[in-house]
Length: 76
Ligand SMILES: [Zn+2]
Image: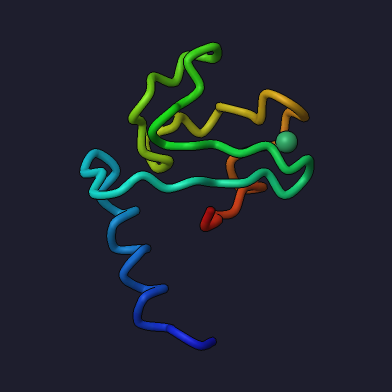
């Protein structure tokens, strides 16, 4: 782990779902679909600017139906 401090800091942000300090992106590990917090997923009821932590647990990947736990935060 090259930068464990930075890694932990990101999880602190995630624990405050309605405080979006920077837009992050999350990738579906099954099909590679990208969720962008700034863009949201308006076609499926997620308005732009919705933090990942605020996305409902029953939301699924629009491409393959994977659950939130199958997504991983990515840097673009
Ligand atoms: Zn997917």
